[in-house]
Image (tube, rainbow, N blue to C red; front, side, top):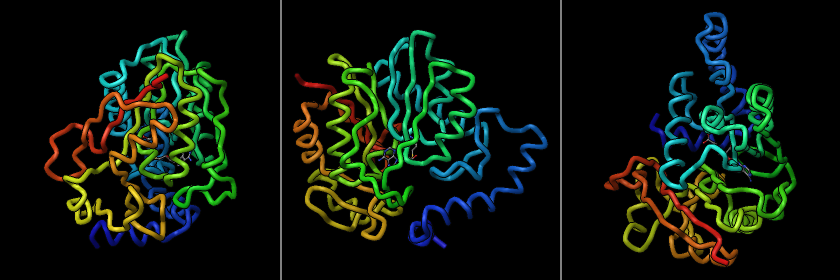
Length: 283
Ligand SMILES: C[S@@+](CC[C@H](N)C(=O)[O-])C[C@H]1O[C@@H](n2cnc3c(N)ncnc32)[C@H](O)[C@@H]1O
């Protein structure tokens, strides 16, 4: 079965069904790893890694280190920064940050999947008092069937709390109204001279046609200024027109510092899969 067909079936299942199947599928290898001690103490069992294809311990740590390096390169991350990680998942980036931030620095992360937040709190927050993870029960048709909507969500932090705010592969899984609200909230909780970093699937008039038929990452459902991979699971994957993104940011007093095109669109030469956008407050 090819990956496109697999994803259609996979996304057709409920979040609970997907968690259960993954847990059972990886149970033998997870039991083996527990007995043999082959897993780093901060890396979750494969069956709990609900984002992407579950990596082994070494790869999971390596992926986090690469994310950290990407943040250092793009938003000049400093060991004493106050950081916010939106969609903190199951701790991939946070693990790498535990050996980067010093005691003046701090890490806050939140996510709509309780399993991930619970794992991070029970392992990372337990060992590092400047790391905090919050579960926020918001609806996302890929991850959480709650009734509360992300488009009205107020981040649980005071204004101008963070030097740097980042999200990996979050805005590729949210609806356009929700993303708009998250930009508003980022603008509120980011310090005046702070920097934000997020990854997206972006397109413009040059590659709009190409992404309609782009293998595993084809966006065929056309909306006003953005495209969906599937109309059934709207958070499955979202691609946004670059001009629309600029306008959405500007509406919340945010401006683009730079865009680094990723290699999800065939032909692009980059180290990153998704497109990186660095942005800041423009007041
Ligand atoms: C592809 S995963 C990436 C996780 C993590 N950033 C990483 O790189 O490993 C997307 C994450 O966004 C979270 N998410 C989805 N909608 C969200 C929302 N409205 N607010 C916060 N997190 C959300 C999902 O639960 C999931 O953990």
